[in-house]
Length: 314
Image (cartoon, rainbow, N blue to C red; front, side):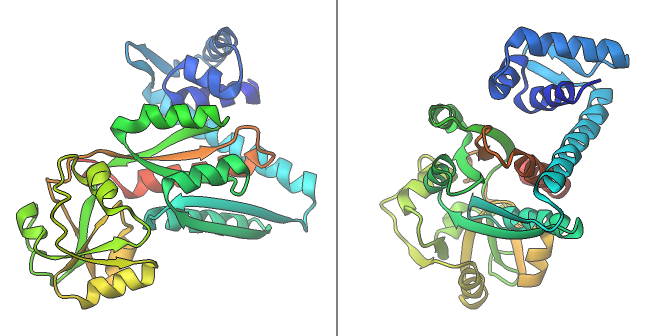
């Protein structure tokens, strides 16, 4: 069993195909396919089912994938530690779309670095999807998280490939509504849009409002109706506005439960938000910090899987 074979398994699982994995790893498809067959023969474990829609992990493969991913992460951590020296400092930059769960996941990953005795200089930038792609392709950031409607995934895939970047699907979800626990509509399980639009919407200050609504909420959103809106540029002020304005609400991506409890907020469904959203991790496979990038990816993936189940995805 070789480390390269484990990297192939992880790539196939993430890409859903041998072709995609080979492309991501800059390997030939026959080499990846042969290596997988040899690994399955050596271990006696069928890691993947070959289906019409792609490669799917078997139950035994799920367990193998989890262990393989950890081994790869540990290997790169070990290499980083001894190639740079025990007292070295890590400089790492993350660019991401506005999202509390991404911030929390990166924070937990930083805890892992700290507990391993590593020193670090970490830069975390919240911005829009276009800026994230620019940051990664220019080298200003080492890893990024972008957000797009599921239907636009192929368009962004082409943009990333043209810049020599690759992507990992992090999670998919519809946007939900966040509001105060005692908001006039907070008792409803599924808030009718006609009632919601009479309230005050709190919005990220750097969002193009019409583009945001049509791209992430509903493609038929009536942009002629402006309603009541408050544009805010920092996270603390958004929570303050939601807590202060009696009828305020905000469209949000997945939120950690701890954040909701701390801020006195609840999340509610609004079926009018029919667009499926996809958060994707982007990075350069040629980066010298690929070990740290893989470690950060694992933390983001684990946090998403552990905290957001069917209640967010449906």
